[in-house]
Length: 291
Ligand code: KIV
View 1 (tube, protein in one colour):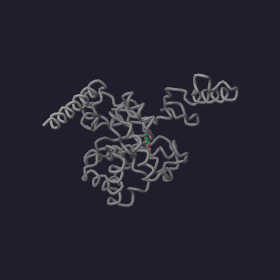
View 2 (view 1 turned 90 degrees about the horizontal axis):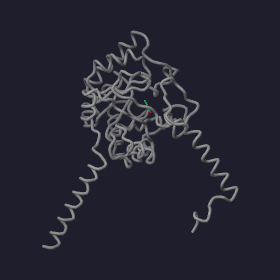
View 3 (view 1 turned 180 degrees about the vertical axis):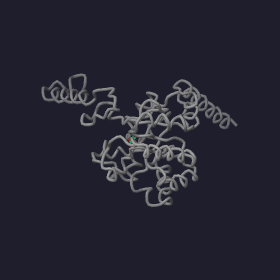
């Protein structure tokens, strides 16, 4: 009797604690429904990439709405020239590290190159593996009509999909350049039709990369799902940047759309120089810093 009473009291305490934690830290999860509500209220959506636990924890606590575990990890984390080499298992490693850190943001993971292009069965298998092994909430994949069947199959399995149009870095060797896409009428019309198709088959959102503002404005006004842009101007429903780029960790990458919020490259360099100097001079560790 006593045991039973105590354990229910214990469960109640945990319940109350969780309620308090939820209320105090304002940790209600960002869901697809919330993103839709944000669009209908013209509330802008903030999104950043992250690939590891430490950064994901900081940006989640800072209140970012969506965290994208982008295949840009291939460039940023592994130093590859393109996004093509990163594997499904490497994406899962990054994504599960991010998921462990996050309490509030919606976590989306890129399906990497070569894991969904062959056929829709393979695409579904890849998406299921990512969802099962990383604990993420949704996947993103590049392409319009050519990806239609795969996207439909993934959505039918209950996995939310964000589409990705405009500059699609996984096709870099087809286009040969990272320049602005859909500048002419034919390409712009194709992109708009692709966006409408992605919404129709059930994508919960579409990401537009490096296209003219006038076109993203048209897409955002015609679609009811949230449109996230990178280098797609101000008329979309939300913005995404690569975290390391906006923190100023990469001096070699300066496209017009990139706003740097920190000079992290310099700050880290200065801190490391100071640390090194302190060691060499015998200043570190001092008396208070040892046992
Ligand atoms: O992989 C990535 O970082 C992306 C960008 C568009 C943000 O897909």
